[in-house]
Length: 149
Image 1 (tube, one colour):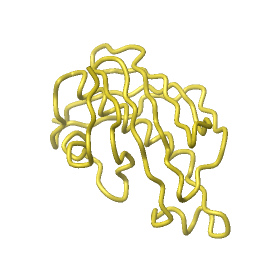
Image 2 (cartoon, rainbow, N blue to C red):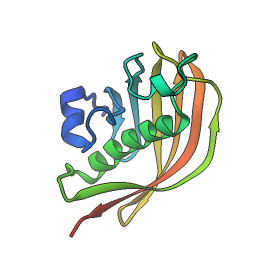
Image 3 (cartoon, one colour):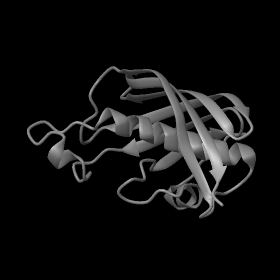
């Protein structure tokens, strides 16, 4: 069964907020398997004035962060829990990151993340994002959930 989530449901599942919330909608989610989500990229993004003023491009590290946020939603749904103020979700590793095309204002970044492995709060994913069906970024991500004391 696939699940869809709007921004209100995403806000319940991620601790991130503007300007660092990078998932606008979940189109498909299969617990323990995969997630497909979108980030609508607008000229109003706070990073565009400096990256780059003459040709705005979404920074690659933020594309990876958007993928990690989608992965976090999948992780929390898979574990059957909602994060609280004592839950943190960290990057533990990024392997094989490749950037294939720039992402610019007006683009819709479609993110697809597949769970490869989960054990003891550590998750490994195959992640990719595309614009208009054209691959923009791909990587293997490793993330960990931890409880703060």
